[in-house]
Amino acid sequence: MCMCCLTVGVYVVLVQASNLVSNESATMEFIVEKPIVGVSINASTEYIQLGSELYFQAIIDSASDVHCDWNFGDLESAIDAGNATTLSLRIFSSRFF
Image 1: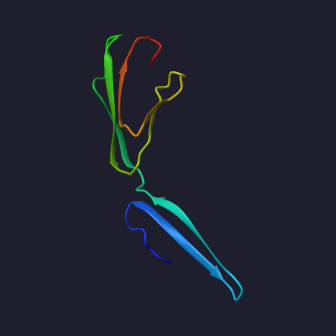
Image 2 (image 1 turned 30 degrees about the vertical axis):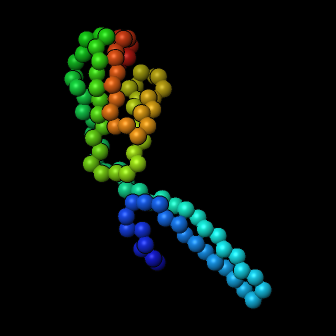
Image 3 (image 1 turned 135 degrees about the horizontal axis):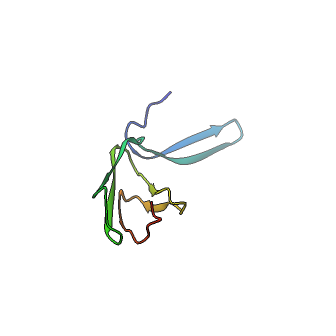
């Protein structure tokens, strides 16, 4: 077993098959990423006034290429923040939480 992928990155594997009458080859690209370790949330405040802005930040100790979805338990769809680990919201409804 080859341990060729010791760092995060994009790698290409090549296979070559042959016999006495032919040969073929194929390549495939794969990505090595670090697993997510140690996730926590920081917020700008615990209590806010309706109409105020609130900031959230996901703190991730170790990972690569992280995608964040924020769900607030309000039966609405999760907020897709993409690769951003921070989110800013202005609270306009008392049914938000």
